[in-house]
Length: 586
Image (cartoon, rainbow, N blue to C red; front, side, top):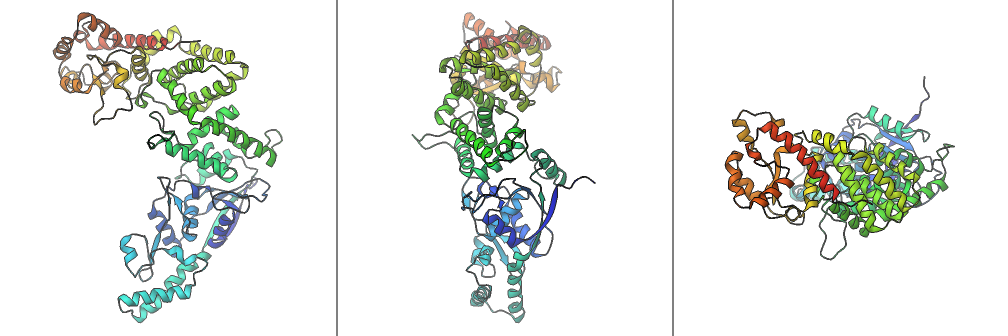
């Protein structure tokens, strides 16, 4: 038999909660948004009350020395010996209710979980206003486990309040104290935990989690690192989560804020930026081992090593969340022509480009103008080719490895430009990209790059004198979007001429950006019918220029549909290339 890497430990609910309270078991989620619905918390207590099993917990030995220190919001008295891997929501529920500790709700606000109990019906419910007014309910069972609560006195007070409302039968006189006493004694409820040895690495822990809890959300490396932050740098984790929350909420006037129109980051996403900047790593498993204080050569854990690595994380996270850096970077996206988040198909492209921008700024001291230009070109290339879409960690790991040969600002710029040129070759522009545009995908990177190119070229919207960048201003919000994607050959028209294949109808080459009012007027009419009406607004020279930038052949509306798609794909690729050329290289 293989070596057993875990041991079974039996707890009572009281012992388990006290170990959490004292800090022997790390429960970071008490300070994170609580995702369980209150009904599941109610059902958890109902199951325990009825003597049903509630599953076991999976704990992982920390591997640290266990020196005394303060962590968390409650001033824990020592570093956790055990980290909770599976059962976080259950343990958070039990701890929050029995200790009357507020959890953080989805809006990042503190909130008590209030569970009610009806002693006569032996029924649990989520507390509401009707229950609070009903003397037959204990509106919040947390009061039963407060140190100052005397069970006998509580029962007598409950019976007296009930008698004020109605008569109580002898049977009820017996049943109510029994039910309440049974609820109080849930402190003795047995809970089993499996404790995994600290020598087991995070990959194997994640595998164990998946094997025994197939219905749960698979753990990833970011989960482990965020847990470590809760244990050893709780303030840093709170800062990270506060930053992400503020980035999603419009700020009050004149108050600095990370709010933006591009990215609504999650903590694990921003963590990746800090890791890339501080450790030049994209694969988080290496960083997790370092943050645990593990020497990757000797395999031994060291408090000194852990503190050293956390010092790096502290420094880089501060730099990543610096509001000046944060908002300065978004100018890079605008310089790349991506004026709206609706045309960004990969958040990872934004995050990893931000990391490269920070590396260039902080570590290589690249001039701000030159840095913006090269990183704008990089983002355009990454967004167009889906560089960070398939295996983003592996791809970014390779990109970071390229910088190991860089020792100066010129080296940094040269390496990035060489990569851009290696990807965006003549064959790419003339063969690969036109073929990639042969798609009906709703979020096609080539089509988005085409819109970015129109912004870079500052051209008018099709059949309009308003320019694309003006109508894409994300700060302008109306009931209807100022710009809409329009089928040049309307869907119903194509169906009328027996072209019903959605892949042909919805091809990227059949779309153009038009003003909303024009889209309504065009409806499902034939291009031969609506185009002359729109052309009448413009001079011949204006139409010629408009068609050139919108990748439309002259008298395109008279072309056979399949030939039109083929020709427009080629022209769109050329427009994208010209737009990209507007971003200066170095």
